[in-house]
Length: 100
Picture 1: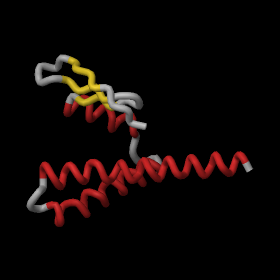
Picture 2 (picture 1 turned 90 degrees about the vertical axis):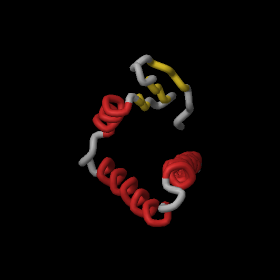
Picture 3 (picture 1 turned 90 degrees about the horizontal axis):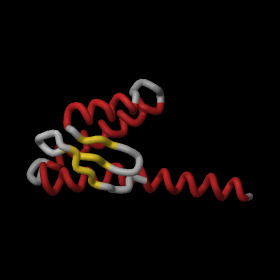
Picture 4 (picture 1 turned 180 degrees about the vertical axis):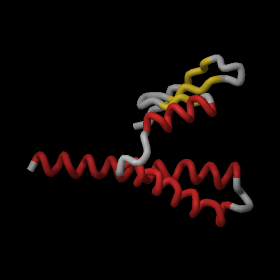
């Protein structure tokens, strides 16, 4: 009984994380970056996220490599407990934001 409750709580947490994973970035893209073209772009963006997650689940994509690529390409370090974003001069500026 307790094990079933724990499994359900874990599944609820994963479901909530999935909603956040899709909703927050898509809302920002819609409002800030694609206000005129979001109806055409957001469905493809959502499909690409889901495709990437499926590739990660099947082992085709390495999450550590993706994190390293984002760090090297954009100066944004994604960690479990915070996002560390560098300034343009590559000085570290830490913004502690819970990701879980």
